[in-house]
Image (spheres, one colour):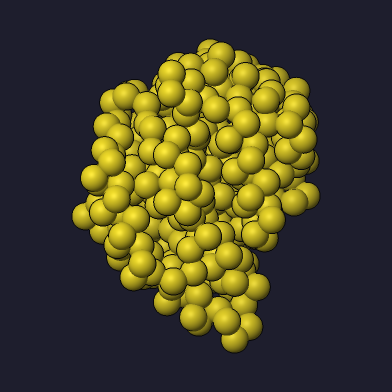
Length: 298
C-alpha cells in the first residue's frame, strides 16, 4: 500500500446510486475527478458518508475495481473495509491491499458494545492477522457516535505493539479535539486525521496529517483554502463553519446529497440505501433554495 500521499485534504465520498439502487460506477469516478480538479488530494470510499455498511462485500469490491479501471489512481484512494463480521472485513481489506490503494480504513467490529481496549485491539487485530501481510497499511476509524465502539490511546498502543507500521494512522470523527490530541501526543509518528471540518486548520497546526471529511463533497475549494492557509484561510474557516451550522438539525447524509445534486444538476445523488430515506423533490428543492445563503460551495 502507498501512504506517501496520505496528507492534507481527503474527502469521504458519497456513493452514487442508479435508478435500480445499484452503485453508479460512472458517476462515482466522475465525482472523484471533479474533487481532484478542485484541489482534493484523495478520496475515502465506503466510510460513513459513503454508507459503507449498507453495501455488500461484493458490491464494495466491484465499486473499487470500477474506480481503478476508470483511471482513478490507487494512491489517491482509501477504502473503508470495516464490517461487523471479521471475515467480511478481512476479505475487503485483502482486496484493498491487492488493489494497491493508499490504505484500508478499518472500524472495530462493532456489533458488541461496551468493548474495552483489549477487545477493540483484538477485533481490529483479528482483521490484520487475517490479511497477514506486512505491506498492509491500516487507518483506524474512530466514530463512536455511530459505531458505539471507541478507539482510545490504550487500544492504539496494543495494536502498535503487535503490528507496528501496519497500523499507520487514525481517522478521528468524534469531533472531540481532546481525544484527537491525546492520540497525536501519544503516537506522533502515526497519521492523524480529523473528520470535523472546522478542526482542519487546527489539526495541521499541531502536526496532524489532515482531514477525511464529508463536507468536502460539496465544498472542496473551501477546504483546500483551509489547507493552504495564508490570508484566505480566515474567510474559508468562516465559510465552512457556516456550512456546518446549515447542517444542524438536518440529516447529514440526505442534506449533503441534496446539496451535491443541486451543484451537479444530477438528481441521482439524492438516492440512498435503506434504512435511510431519501429526500423527496420538495425537500431537495428546499435545500437547493437555502444553499443560496452559503458561499464557497462547489
